[in-house]
Amino acid sequence: MGILTEFPEMGRADLRDFKKGIDETFRLFTREYGESIENFFYPLLKFLGWFERLIVATPWPLMILILSGLVWAGSRSWGLVFGTIFTLLVVGYLGMWEDTMFTLALISVATMLCIIIGIPLGILMSKSDRTQSVITPILDIMQTIPSFVYLIPILMLLGIGKVPGLIAVCIYAIPPVVRLTNLGIRLVDKDVLEAADAFGASPRQKLWTVQMPLALPNIFAGVNQTIMMALAMVVVAALIGVHGLGQEVLKAVNNQYLALGMMNGLAIVAIAIVFDRVSQKFGKRLQKHSEVIHG
Amino acid sequence: MASQGIEVRNLYKIFGPRGKDYVEAVRGGMSKTELNEKHGHVLGLNDINISMPAGQIQVVMGLSGSGKSTLIRHINRLIEPTSGEVLYEDTDVCKMSDSELLEFRRNKTAMVFQKFALLPHRTVLKNTTYGLELQGVAEAEATERAKRWIDRVGLDGFEDHYPNQLSGGMQQRVGLARALTNDADILLMDEAFSALDPLIRTDMQAVLLDIQQELQKTVVFITHDLDEALRLGDRIAILRDGAVIQQGTGQEIVLNPADEYISDFVKEVNRGRVIKVDTIMKPEKVIADAVTIPSGSMLEEAAKKLTNASAMSANVVDSSNAVIGTITIHDTIEAMVTPATH
Image (tube, rainbow over all chains, first blue to last red; front, side, top):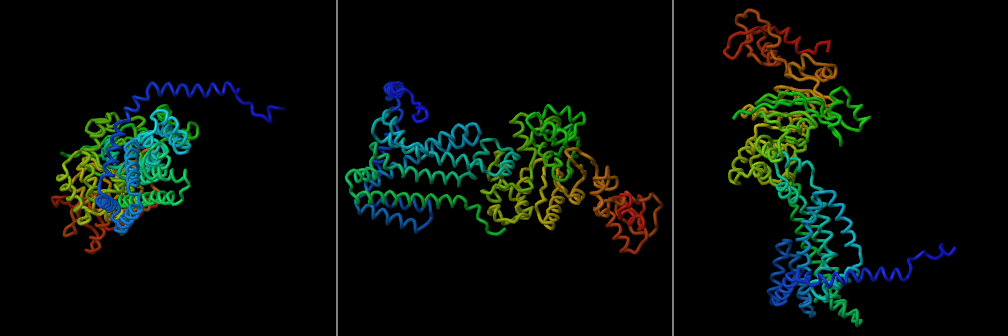
């Protein structure tokens, strides 16, 4: 009867050895390759460091000018430009300027990285059903596994610092851009593709003249989601040593500073809203051709 | 260079993972239904043999599911044949390598689609230059060549519009301009006018005939509409269940339908617009002071001329105005009325 009330577990000693085995193996791997992996990521570290310093060192009026210029270029909306300027002024006045700049740098670099890796991956995925069936479950894992779980191996490999933080953000944030690139390309009208074929488009010409332009609105929705998810990871990244608003939030949690937590949390929200609105407006502008005037 | 004809020989298409294995069985007489029910393969094309004349319009007509769209896609190999040949300039399109096929599609063929298939993110002008862009023609030259055809199909002033901003008829004009700008010898038109309103369709048919008179391309035109087939086709092939059941000129088909299926079709046709006076004229003596009707005129025109002149008979003359026969109003009207036997 015992078997029904008590689960037939693996022996306690065996289980311990099993876990120990995995840990030891990974530790060995870390000792063996940790340094070369760190060297591999060194250019990224340098770039992120340089970018952070650049943004923080830029005088604040100039920075506001640059940011509102970017917002205008992306959205063509004065409302958004003024909203952005107002938000930045408030954030700066409340003493969060530097932290906000650090976070901005992290999000920008993480998004760039996700786009550089994610779009080609999505294109690859759209080319073959087999690739898709391999990559999809990996993306599922990346999105659902608790982020603390993959922080462990990242920490073991790279220790505390900016690069492991960046990697953790990217693991969580990259799936949407990959998925939506794949989806966007697959959703391109078969009739239009056939026309491209009939006129003698090579696979490469088809990709650049038909598939990518028509998938762009979807890809952009993916980029938008990627940015939002990167922002959601700011506090987790702070856990492993990334500067910015996230660290202040952590400090607030540890010391029960309500106001500090709220202020920094809302600053993250403000950045998120600006990013979201600008990228959505930009995405809409990409679809200008689908407006029906008469027909 | 004058356009060349296209020879389709012993072409079979069987859809399914093991199509090739069933070609022999189909050759041996296995029916479409048997192939589908017993072996789960679909017979798309069954032993197609058509000589498409150079510089003329070959119409392929059939109802939906007859395989006509499958057939036209074999000419530029958008669909791989299961067996058979498609010869153009003595080259078998079915045996071309990937790069040869790409060159063939770029330089020798252009296609117009039923659902237009325009690139929605490009303007009218950019759609029209698409083929030239793929060929690597410089933009300035491509624009110049495209402008000419945009004007010709009546879209002058719409160069910077997007396809979504145009009506169906105008979109298909863009499709036609895009195909013509390629200046390819072969023009493939897959139910090109089927999605258009009747009036616009007639309009587009006139545009096509007008352009064809000037260019003399080898046109393959797919349609399900017999009136359209008769109006446009120098030669017509009728397809059913993937096989050609009759081919010939429009007049040949109307006068001698091969079977009941076709005679059902041609019953509704306005014969006065299909049958030429040459068919019914009698080589009798010249009638003095009679109306003259040029050889090749349709019966309807002849009847109109006869009634306008209140004449009972007329002379048929060739291009040098020599009389080659005579017709009477009685024979004309008799030929225009559907014979009871059909």
